[in-house]
Length: 402
Image 1 (cartoon, one colour):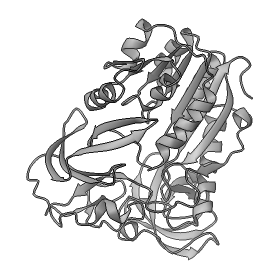
Image 2 (cartoon, rainbow, N blue to C red; image 1 turned 60 degrees about the vertical axis):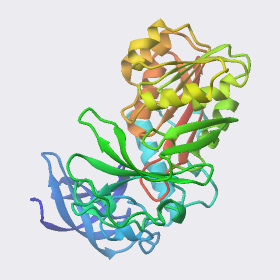
Image 3 (cartoon, rainbow, N blue to C red; image 1 turned 180 degrees about the vertical axis):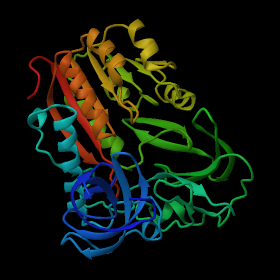
Image 4 (tube, one colour; image 1 turned 30 degrees about the vertical axis):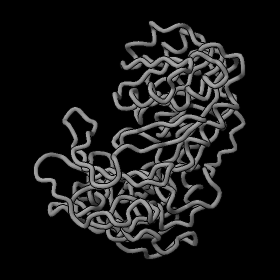
């Protein structure tokens, strides 16, 4: 098997990343653009020692759940939407299957924990398009806006993506002059209805900084939990327009009144910690991003919230013991060192928010090893039309979940 080779393959179970698993001559092939049970013609894009990747170029025997590609940019080759060829409810089912596999293989759960019914549910009922209120757009060599092709540096110059509401992209410049360096155009539609767009430059160390404001002020005004946040467009905020409110509702329900002190780890601007601070809970927010910390300090001035701009693993041991912990790590998860520090602090409640099923399952297993059981869990389709989703779990000391 070599890159560029054409294969006819019948695929089976879904895998994370928008792939479906097939086998050719005993080798596992992760096929994008296919649905379980289909026979497709695919082109090999990558060959490793134990597996290969391929992309569907023709569907020979389609699934009943296949629909016409709903994202024009994806149809042109962009990597923005990798599940818009599936009926939306079926796409959520595929995500549910991926999560179940991660919980079983990586989390070592014999059955779904915390009474979880296995369903990846909608954040907002019926909202499968136009849900994104901020995005990062790539620039082609001649300055046109678009998306990277899947697993590629190639830019597909199209803004006709199912994720984007018209108000987010209408009237953006056809071309942007960004000679030299690593550039993106970052766009946000804030809660005041104002669209902001900035030309941002990336650093080798990671992160982005505004280089030129193209529209609006470059400062998005977001409202959450009774507080107004002035967030630079390049700073992190949830992509789905309703995600902050939905996650905050769960945190408010799961963390009991009377939690005197809490940690909000990888806390950004402290949005979730502020949910607890509204009840009088003293909150330590730990975050490394300067823009987020600056915005949070301004928005939460006068509340019992203290920000620590340091890496989580460097600061948690010095913080006062918490009654509750909100844990929202990056895609790689919190990891053994941070999980151990949290467990050593013996909080009565932990809320874990995870955006990668494998990392999330691994963190849950580590917490189980430290005596925490999953009491409740939900999974939410915070990125409709893509393979991404979010998981939230409530953990408490005691008998571990099965």
